[in-house]
Length: 552
View (cartoon, rainbow, N blue to C red):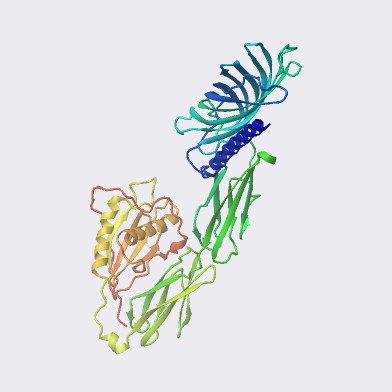
């Protein structure tokens, strides 16, 4: 009995060590998202060295039983039905100098789990055995086996090879030898034989590309981190570790805003209408399967709504000095940080509100002194900005002594005849003309420019305005001319062209054409070409009759 107790104690200690080792492997599992994944093979073959030790039993042994420890080998093959479940067959053979060969075999199941590079497992088997010695002919019986173990795969790149660090088994053997005279260690000819064994060796892992142990993962991101109030946000998700052939359930939640539709897809759109400025969070969850086989993963992202910013506006009057009853053109140029729709009004303390067309108005002076013009802009959400322009109205005596006002002069004319597919595009030949105009504007910083768009009789009248706006865009965006110094007008001149009229400080414009509301012009393609190396050609100049502002 003491011997049996010691053997069972040693076997228990070995089992505890195995499972402590497996628990350590659990702690070393790779984190979610690791690019190195340990797959489960289709078939696994194990060959190893093993050690077998008997546990004395009162129904089998007495003091004259020829007992000894046994060394031998163990081999097994496992076919995996699932990453965690396999059907296993195992054989072993051990040799004892007194007893001879002892062979066991079994078929059963193996349960395992891939953890980083370690694979702990449990198996249960049953099958035939054979046993005997020199005095007893070998007799077949049966064996029941239960045990644990752990494999180690050294390389992710070569997962076909592994090392079985340990396999520890308990076996119960039953053999019926029949009546045996002179064999007191047999109980009615039946041997009940209990053994414990330990084994280590090499593992060959074959196939299994379809079984990938990958942690369920989900990621999501907003298409824009910052938006203006009221703009929609789109959140897109991706996932790993799920079976694409099985149904997947999405669930989305947002701390504010309304999720468009039913929110059941891999991407959602959030309506932010009415939300206050600040940060907001979106959480997504993906689920597949049910019960113990359920896979789930979550992600979160966010977006920030900017605080609304008011528009800005600049105001310029040309000319800035006029005689009584003279006129000056006042132009307001507004910008909205959120690209809101802008509306313009003009007012003065003496004249009140001044009639205007778009962002341009004409003011007539009625007495000497400084005339302060307020340029007001408001966006479609009620935010406002104001700038002022001061017009110096000169007394009649001083006006009579004023030198003749400088003349307006025509600059070169830009043609749009060559590219009928893009009839409003400023091409490279036209840039030569516009570059000269830009140089003149840079030399005379107080001068302004009127660009007068035209269209042919068989064209839409809107092309005249689009051509003039494209010319202004080239001068301001490419040549750095202040937009407030360029006035856009359109006329029905019957030609595919834009005429440029240069207004030095103090000169006045003859009001030809109509004022263009630039924000309402619809563009068809790019405003101007970006090619290089165009041949510069001489452009025609349209002679215009100079207009002299008469002194009042």
